[in-house]
Image 1 (cartoon, rainbow, N blue to C red):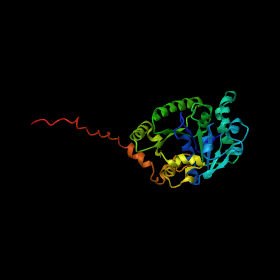
Image 2: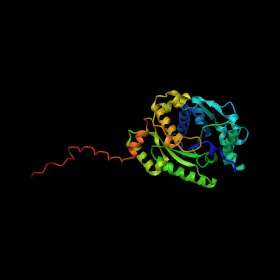
Image 3: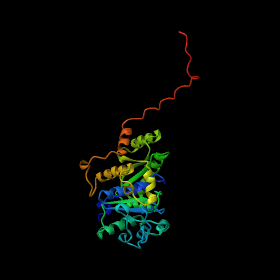
Image 4: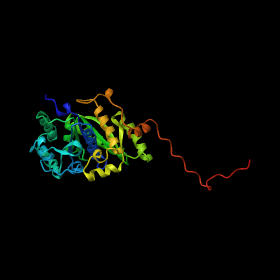
Amino acid sequence: MEETYAARVPVYAFVNQKGGCGKTTTAVHLAGALAARGERVLLVDLDPQAHATMGLGCSPDRPTVTEVLMGDALLSEAVAPAPGGITLLPAEPRLAEFEEISGRLIHPERRLARALDEAYRAGVRFDHVLLDCSPRADGVLCANALYASSHTLLIVETGAFALQGAIQALKVLDEVAENQGRAPALRVVGTMFDRRTRFARELLVALHSRFGDALFDTVIRTSVRLREAPALGLPVQELDPTCRAAADFDALAEEIMALEGPGQIQSKDRPQTPQSARSDLMEYELRPLSPEPAPPASPADRPSAQPS
């Protein structure tokens, strides 16, 4: 049996069962951080909303991921250069049609893996492939990502109902893995972290309790720059390489490169992580939060002095 693309090159599928969790933001800016380190990075937009494509200021003027999945174009014909040294396989709304016709295809969930394999054999090589999935984790587009990937990156925002949503997504991913007969390695990324709020800190502790070593040390903090970057069509490394968001994604890129796998550095060779949100995580995962101090009692609530 021929070796698959994901056995040669690390392929990461960014998933969740809900939108608004920072999935596309993480995929785009992690791609930018890896590219800034001199890595050859392919970012595949597998979302019919095409947010990764728009977030990098790209307007497809060539075949897109739709044509690649349909078998009407080679991956090498569809990829395009994007800001920050990223190579992009763009999407557009017509990608939703692939969901509709997939029922008439044989093994539609293997289309992306096949396209990556063909590109590799043709000499189109990357050091990392990042797959930005649609919010629908049970659809054929996400199934393509999971079948083609070596790692599943579950993106979890540190907000209300995030842990419940992550657990629901895991159930869907388990079902897909069972149907495919394979399960990529799972890692978890915390996003939208605001350490000023007690709720976010407690949720981070809960995420660590639930996922343990699968949770990356780095957590992506809230940042104005991350809201500005897609409006300008740039990865944050190009917008402001000195901002804390760029530091967060650089730390996450370092952890990604430290994962064992083909072409990766081993953990023992891992350089020192720059100061970033990593310290926020370590602070709160090692000790429980102390209770909030009770508000001072009003004069009416204070007990009156009793005679001795």
